[in-house]
Image 1: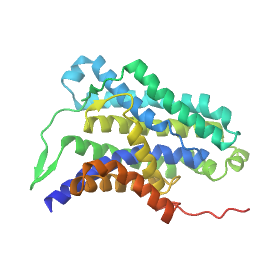
Image 2: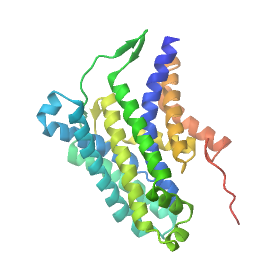
Image 3: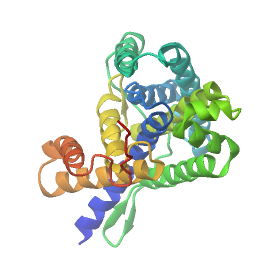
Image 4: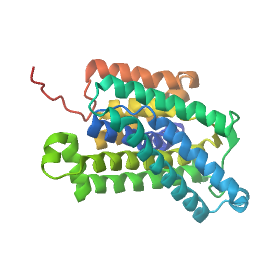
Length: 300
């Protein structure tokens, strides 16, 4: 029983990170109907910026503190927010009225640019990462709850609640939902669609940066290709929950993290990556709209 609870705790911790990345995918898709495959590499960039920021402040790298980690996190999220804005403005906006396949190919190109440009800029060698204070794991009746896991839970849930508040209880969130429903009608109603789309990219990139820092803290290593597999799995999580659906992205991320940990714990760790894509195939066959997604009738 304790072993099962341990796997559940580890799965929820990993799933919360997937959920943060998946939220960026689902928001961009909801507004633009675009799969931003460069999103996983913004996740990588957030972790790399956190590494270099903490290395710049040698005291923070050698003696991590909570407030130092918060400062590094804010800086990384700000940089990634700017990068997200630039990506949308330079790569996607000129293609907004082009066939959708053009934007998709561009997204793949931007992803490769960030990955291999990162290898050239940062170097291909993995670097150790640690911006959180070192604490011993809590032992609760045989259940080990790591300090990093607690931080991941708290930060992830806080960011998800903030996002939920922005999307469903603010004027800009109402504008985002209006643009998602029908961009042309929203424009006619006086909504600045260009600003809303840019804001969506910035918000998704900020969440990806936070996820990158949490992931690098949980698995303490950073390198330019670290966003490839988590980015793909977060895309699976977004589809699993219902892409374009914010609560669905959260649910999909948590379910995917749980499935990975249970498969690794009770079967084989070599199958943990395969199970994510098996879940994608199953959900596309059984319910293509996702668990919380809805099928919209299309007039032909």
